[in-house]
Image 1: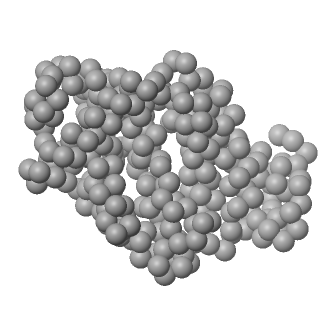
Image 2: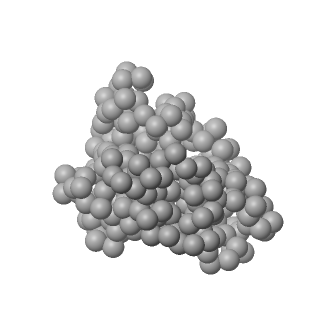
Length: 265
C-alpha cells in the first residue's frame, strides 16, 4: 500500500469526504481513488461479459477510471446514498460512453437489435401479454433457432441499453435506468416523483417477465452473479442465459421507452 494509504486508512471516511468537498485536497482525492480502484476492475469485469473479443478488459478499466475520478469530484457525502453505489453508476456510465464514442457495435448488429426490440414491443403492446420465442420468430419471418442465434449475436447491445441516461429535474440530475432502483431522499420533489414513477414501472415490468428471464435479471443485477454462474444455477448453458438476458432487457426497455415518451407529452 502507498504512503497515502498509511496516512488516511484510519480516518473517518464521511469526514474525509466532507473535508475534500471543502478544501479539494489533492492527496485526499488520490487516497480515495486508490481505495476504490478495485471497484473499477469489478465493474469492468461485469461489463466485459458478453462483449466481443475486440473489446479489451484493460481498455474498459481505463475508461472506468475516468468515471471513478468523476464520481469522486461530484459525490455529496450528505446525500442518502453510499459512494460505492454512486461510483459504480459513474464508472459504468463512463465505460459505456466511451464504447458508444468508438462505435464498437457494428451497424448491422445494431439494426438487428433494434428490429427485434421493436418487434417484441409491438407484439406485447398489441397482444397485451408476454410473447414467446415462437411469436417473435414468426413475426420476424425466421425460425426459433435463428432467433436464438440472433439474440446471442446482439447480446452486447442489451448490456449497453439499460445504462442509457434519463435526465431528471435540472441538467446536473441524471440517472441510469438501473439507478432508478435507488432513491436518494433529498432529490427535489419533481425529480423524486419521476424517479419513483420509473422505479414502479421497472419493478412492475420485471414482475411480468417470464420466470427464467426474471431470475436472470434478479441474479445478474441484484445478486451480482455472472452469466456463467447464472447458467450453473438454472442448469442451462451460458449462451442460453445470454439470450434470456437480451430478451428480458428488450422487454424492459420497450416498457421504459413507452413510459419516457408518455412523460414527454
